[in-house]
Image 1 (cartoon, rainbow, N blue to C red):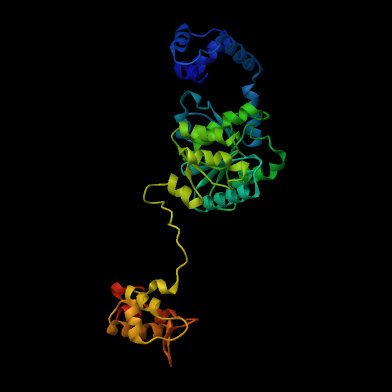
Image 2: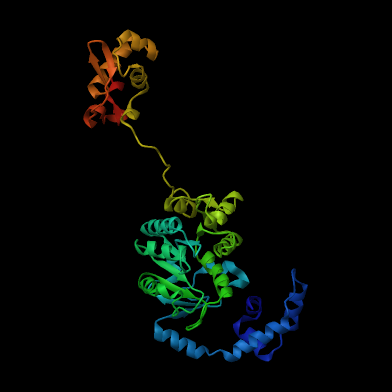
Length: 385
């Protein structure tokens, strides 16, 4: 149908379905193309039956009554990235909420995963959703149980919008338990669907809507996925659309993370462990870099190299003389004495009757350890002798 509309326009395609006869040139084009030729007679019969049961005027009236609006390609609110779907692009979308769909999707990330999420997966999805939202990124998901629900709830805790793409009409709460969640999303974001009001979800509709989740966002993150998870279907659409794809690693013993691990092992997805990692992946080059993880900063990290050498050579139990310390540190006696004085002032070492020894509980004050002065900003006293 997408190819028929692309070739003849909506009105031309509708006319051919009503007549029950396709243009011969279109049939010839389909037959000469690569892949299996569809059964056109069965397709036409199905399209005609659906057309006879359709009531578009009632759909529009009911949608307007419930607060939803229908947008189509060419409208100001239509996200242009959906055009990447080619002939699989939706013909229109029902949108329910106060946000603008096109604007909300300019900086957006899809978070998807298993419905039967583990506590670990739900926690990670909520953390990612909140982190992305606090950084101004819209979170897109499917409104289902598990990872989807956690991602939406996390996003609602932040500042940005969240978008739920449903496999049913925007007025149908599925799952029913998420009724209040959908109300919150309408108030802070958008509920989106290809289906008109009152349409119930089916398994094929869940798989079909996944292409929209992948196309609307800059990238997709699979938080948890078993081998046969529907989230992997969304991941496949993201790869086909040349969108960024990421996956969260989980316990190697968890069946719910097997799909994620396979994506990472095959180099189909980038391993991410935080919202900052995701933003660095999908954000602007050079502007959204994630900070490198670092270990804890210890007071002795601020010492210069010579002072560290002397400190390492000072025994912690029995004292040692300056000559012994100089020998062990590999420095001359004058430098060793200067460093010992500075280290003692900073509280790292102490002088006893038997010689110098390391202080067991150094009390290092910021004023004594570092001073800010030109090019020596943040360096310890021992470097200025």
